[in-house]
Image (cartoon, rainbow, N blue to C red; front, side, top):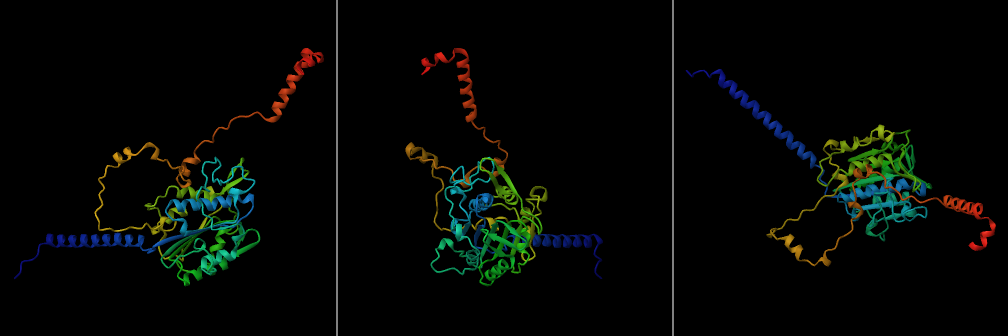
Length: 392
């Protein structure tokens, strides 16, 4: 007859089995979470950035678009994968007190126009027809490569739009408008043609949430600066330029993006919280029901960054070279200091808290004229008219 198994052995076996199951479940959960982060499967990134407003008083809409352009370039998306559409050229506007610049902050420290901006569609080229043709790929064969959205089914696309809008429409140059139905149908054509893997749509305009209400295509995430019935307000007035420099929502999105780097693990849920109603005055909205992944597992760089290429080599590369000694042997005239590009300027977080520069004081013209009048009066009071011949 077999001896009975002690109760202590049963307890140990049960504990070991329980620990094994918990460990397996924990490992499985970590693996599932890691798979979700890399489930995007995209191999390239594209950005379509659109400003739909003309005229000097819409300066802020151009600054909005150029600010997003600056951020996506800094995070790695090249100009060849950016379609930039600006309805007006504020940098060359005769009213601009500082030509060839567009500022996004009232201290005039951050020039978002820079020296290497590539505008693909400008002025009257920015139309509803051209915008829809870019999205759907229905463009003439003669169109240059820089004006094409050459995306595929492995592309993550960021579409940013800003301008004046209303309930269900966005105006283009005060002469035409695009409706939320037309935009939804264009996205459906893109999906049917396999022109995107995932799409992030951001719009900064009045009643912006109405523009994504009609979306029905999969893998689209949408954000808006205001709800239906609300206005999207401007920000950063500048007395020197005479207009507002940015809109509130894009301003705080830009401030958030300045803290992002190419290897950042910040997710989309953090982007949803960047501009609460206490800061934006309007109520930002977002829509994620069409998106297959959990926004918490979607990195910001999945749309604002770029997939970094890795080249594998079988050759041995020596990294022990004395670079410091090599540089010291170079003549001093060969060491050239390149000027900082606009994407390498001070971060927005530092600029916001800087004090404005003290301007040199110059007496007004009326002050100088009054001073001369006072001198002449004192001269006549003291010497009289008879001494005028000695002066002239």
